[in-house]
Length: 448
Image (tube, rainbow, N blue to C red; front, side, top):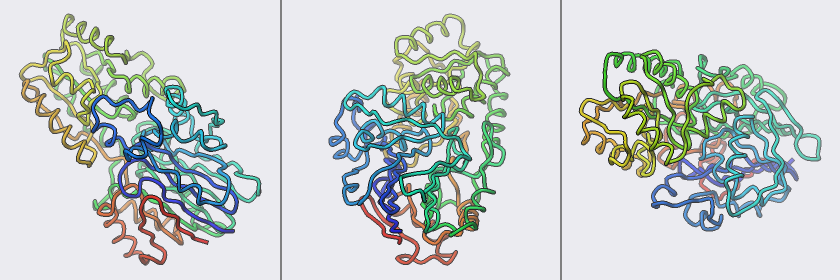
């Protein structure tokens, strides 16, 4: 059976992930993501009403026109998790393919939201929920199976999909860390990865997220970040001024920790921002272990009214958890820094960033500016209370040992970001141009 890998997006940057695997006459697409930095750099842009070709020209979504070079029919679109760099282009591209969207329950609900907000295209793809650990048949040949393997990441319900073919398994390894003590959900299923590496024809190809491949050591568990956050917030228990926290809205485990520790120190947590409401509301809706009684406020006018209430009742009684950890210009925290909300920051007020800057120039510049604005108002910054959602080098070695893939394709980075992975894969016996394929967007790699 002929096996081809089309590296469509996410092979020259962190963002707009999209990869297609052709096995015989059947094609499976993994991820359809957005490059957020290409959107944020424009002021007040709204992608909902934009045409896909304009977004492709901007470099904001994958250029999927290479799909016409693959001889076969798309049988499934499979997003790995609910981050926008993996699902943010589904509303723009999925309608081109007569194929269902198959995802874990939380991811699928987020995809539904993206499709409902779309203002330009109508996608009528079937939406199919599949749990981690499950397998389904793909295509009409009867020899292809799609399996979801549970992984841990900075969002719940993340999976690594595996396409089982007669030539071996194709494992799409974006995005994960090895967390054996997660705050929400099950640990990464390393036992299943080891089984896949040793059963049948083994692993034909492993496509790997290289975000932290230049960082030595091991990525800590989310439970480590939880204890760090607990220590920071407990140290503020006697402070009688304002405390504000920000983190990734999609990081349900971290938001849950913030809510619990806010209450522990006698403050009422309130989630403020549209994406906070979206992600946490979805978690509650599908029954994820999340506080059911927390207040969520999504729209600008309601946020302003909530801030007025906080100021009237006393900042010392509340802990707002807001959007804006990357310094996004329109996010709640950035507006607070500019003095555009009723919340008045004063000397000594605490701002807790339970997130690191995404290593990309737009984010780094915006985050620097946001912190500068906050400090100018007297705020004290607590920075980097966080652990990454991506594997560092030791995790990569462990995955290669578990899967023992015949071919490896680095992804989710640019060329400089691939360098650490090339070094470690070379140390494991792989060779550039033979079985280690460093590629770019818009290429097709023929494996069989």
